[in-house]
Image (cartoon, rainbow, N blue to C red):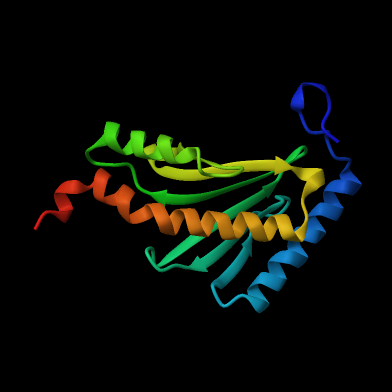
Length: 159
C-alpha cells in the first residue's frame, strides 16, 4: 500500500525476509532457464542485493543490480563510462530518451559514468515485475549503448 505523499509503506522484517527469498528463487530460475543470464551473485553477507549478469549483443555483457530496501526494490545497470566529449549532446540525448523508459531513467553515477536506475515499491514485487525490469534494462541498454558511445566518444569513431 502506498501511504500519503506517494511513499511506499515500510516492510516488516518478516516481509523483507519473504521478499528476499522470492527474489532469490526468481534469480535462481533466471540462471537455470534463461540462456542470456550467465551468472547471478549475491552482495555482501547481510545485504539483500543481487548481481544478474547477462550476455549482450551491443555490449559483451551487462550486469543488473537489484537491491531490496525497506520500502523499495532498487535496480540499476551500468551503461557506459563518463563521456570524453559531447557532454551536452549526450545528456540531451539521454534526457530525451528518459521519456520512453518505464520505471527507470538514465542517470549520472559514480565517476560520472552513465547508468539506468529505477525503483519499485517493495511490496508490489512479483516474478513478472522482476522479469519486466530485467528485460527492460537489457533492451534499453542494448538499444542506446552504441548511439550514446558514438556521442560521448565521437573522436574515437572517426574514419
